[in-house]
Amino acid sequence: MLNLSVRAKIPFLWGKTAFEKRSWARVNLIVGPNGSGKTLLAEQIAEQFNAAGYDINFLRAERYSQDDVDAMKTIRENSNVRQKIEDVLSNMFSKSIRFEEAPGGRLVAIVVNKARGVEYNLRQGECHGLKEILTLLVALYGNRGGKKNCLILDEPELHLHPQFQQFFMNEIRRASAEEPNRIFFLITHSPYFIDLNYPEDLMGVVVCHVNRPPTSVDSLSDYDEQMFRRFLPRFNTYHKQFFFSDKQIFVEGYTDQQLFTRLLPCVENKVGIAGTGVIDVGGKDELGVFFKVCSLLGTDGRIITDLDSLFCGKLREEVCDDERTQAFLDAQREKQDGFYASIFSKKELSKKITLEKLIIRLERYLGVLGEFLGRAEIADDKKIGILVEKVQALYAKHESPENMDTFKTVVLMGVTLLRDELLDFLPLPLAASLGQIINLANFIFAAIERSRVYILRRGCIEHYYTQTKVEYMPVSSKDRIFHSEIEFMLGQNSERLKKKYEELLAILNKACS
Image 1 (cartoon, rainbow, N blue to C red):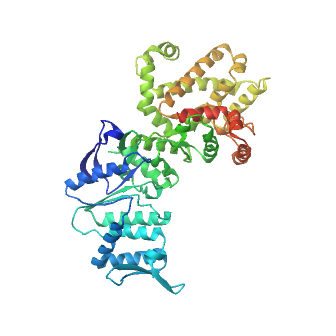
Image 2 (cartoon, rainbow, N blue to C red):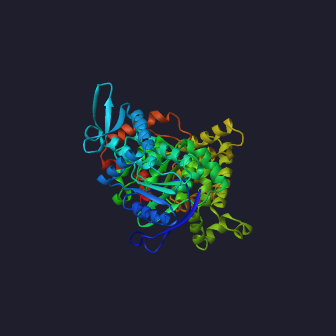
Image 3 (tube, one colour):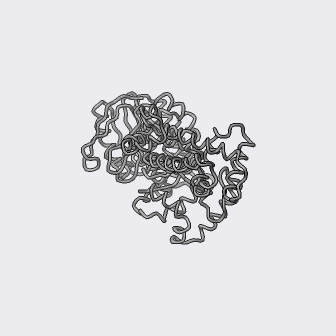
């Protein structure tokens, strides 16, 4: 890492607040949506690095003819750069490429297509991509060793195929390793340049936002480093979309992603969904990691997750530690004193009320209720009978199932869906606890939503399906019933979708508000 203090101000975008950063990676990424001030920020960074003794080379997104002239001048004057570019381009395009002097002393690139037995001028016969990579390679290879050099590339992905983008990023990494006096800044909209191999690479990411200052990671705890070291190998190009918009929504799996993506056009707030995508991450622990990354980078990520996330996993840990959640609970303390007195002892009330404490109390209620259901005789009421059978199946299969997240989820789903039926079925003390369970769960959900996490209160996405009735978790035949649901959705217009998926749209409307 390089330590150099930078302070940037763009009042018409950020107001009076300034962006400040001291720790820089050798390769830094400036990302964010259009209009968020990425290039303006880079200009101020360039000025301050220049004042610190760095030779600045700023290749802007608007490539000018002068850039071509300067590139050819470097190629003419530096034989090492010339040979390197000839070798690299020849390997990239499977065509021999050499530089020759044309009449008048002008240097031109000649492409030799051996398969066709022809030669032609690169400028006249090749695509924009080949011309672009030539300019970029000269900027990269043309550094005069020994001097402190800062290379800033604005939108290096222009006209480049994804494979060429990856190739060029690899070349930047190689140059960074070989030339310790160089530092790189890439202003990019391409996930192929989000090249994060080590946790410390996150400290080189600067995220620009609309109407507020950029954010970045200044330090990582040992715990965060270990977490990201396990996570980054699974961090693919698709996941990297969230670097370019504050409005991404993260979900557990592909079924959630597909349903919510189909419903996004039905959201009431059309401004709220502009730039919004739904990204599936592959599990609730991964949701916790994305929550952490968004928190560190200052992006406003939203998460929609299954009910069992409330009872275990990385996401629960992160939400319980989130300052927005705790601020909500602190603000509610006086208002909720009466409710707290009904569920906590005086000794417990003498200490801080946290989300973790509230969830643990909910789990205790669910455990007591679940133990009764596990011993109960099958009820005459069919709905109660299904719930009792599910709970007793968990007891038959597991020792102490009341400690399992699936057990707690099933019992809470039963309370949510069958409150009236359970009032008649349960003994009086347990029946009296149903109101406390529901009120406590709703209060927990409200606190969690302050951190932009929204829980599927019916359990998981399959319980919102309209074509298949699903009873409790876990769900079997997920793939089959998912395809049935998607086929149905594809045949519906917007108004019909709004009616059939009203509860899911209510969640989306919250997430997009």
